[in-house]
Length: 194
Image (tube, rainbow, N blue to C red):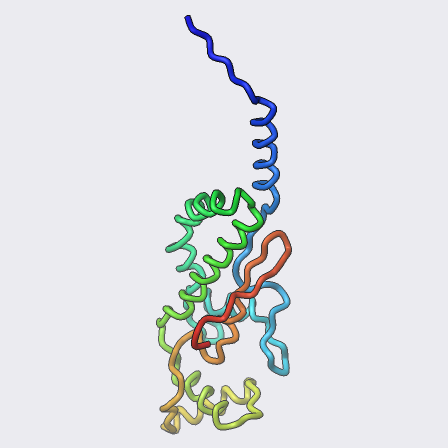
């Protein structure tokens, strides 16, 4: 029987150790709406809270679910492991760089899901609130303003000409998507036309 001899075991061991160090560098990726994000309004409304309400709905106050986040995860998550496996060799097995690239990709998918979500349509009261805000630069949403909008809708006042796109009014939520690699938070790059 022939015997096989391998040389260079020390070099192979060193290369494998270096690869393990690179792969093990970064370990956690989060994508979405990070704690502390707030709308630039008087109350500093929490962006993560608004995103959760939009995704899951708030039936008690008449907000239906628009599961942009849940739908994106269901549609896209099956390929994220394969994506990471393709990215790692292209970045010399550096998990920090690979997770940053994957985070940006998932962030793009989340922003696209916000753009693509169109159902259910906005209520006439929400559209009236958008109209009222467009006519008053000092507009501050409140329960009183909601009641005023309801009355205007009941009186048949037109709210035509306002943006009817669900989930995108001011663009704050869509532009607040971020990704976090081991505690280092990154904003999504602006796209052409934004």
